[in-house]
Picture 1 (cartoon, one colour):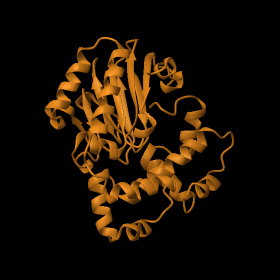
Picture 2 (picture 1 turned 90 degrees about the vertical axis):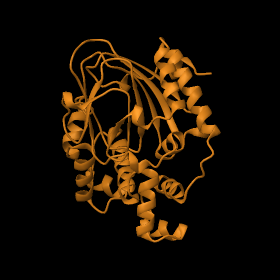
Picture 3 (picture 1 turned 120 degrees about the horizontal axis):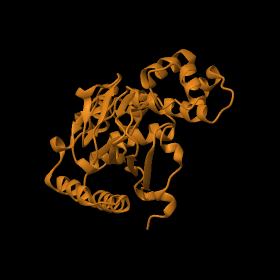
Length: 287
């Protein structure tokens, strides 16, 4: 049974300046390698809201019950980028989000392995894309979404979604692949194991590993390793008062600070110093 704490996460989950309700259910421990959590989000005050998310290894399914978000990869969105219910794949670009203060959605956050097992198709079909859910949903999944849309309370929506996701993943019969092993090793090592070593572990060539890994996971192993290292940098930087960027780069597996700056630019759209300044004034997750 979900606790009241699960249903009321910290207010920091919503960027400052956005008046919104936020509800959450977490995945059971044995399934956290497949999905992390399910979130309910409801804006309460008509106004323009802008958010930005850095590149990550999350594949979200967004079920919209209100006005659609405008979302774009690597650039500010326009009305042409309206996204109602959709599924987003992995990308190395930041995600820019705009809403009108009347957005309302349920978001299921899958890992790449979990998304492949839940949706039952290769993840490279989603790379750098946000696809309408109707384009990828089999009848059973379409019925699941219709049921969620019929429910009127956040507790009911979240409880139904959590129960369904758990049931579908536990009943899944797809076999794990060598690419799954490689992803696990990258996560275990903080992205600091070489692709050559990983290829030797599973008896593949680097080229074959890169091709199969991208098909199963959505990005090439080298890119995933970079995203993992970048995530470590963000975590450390958010908890430090004074940051030695050069030292932090080395600690997180970068060859030097210039490689860290490159990844910051690609994955967040900002320099480390600009991101840090916005973090300190509470606008790191807005644009």
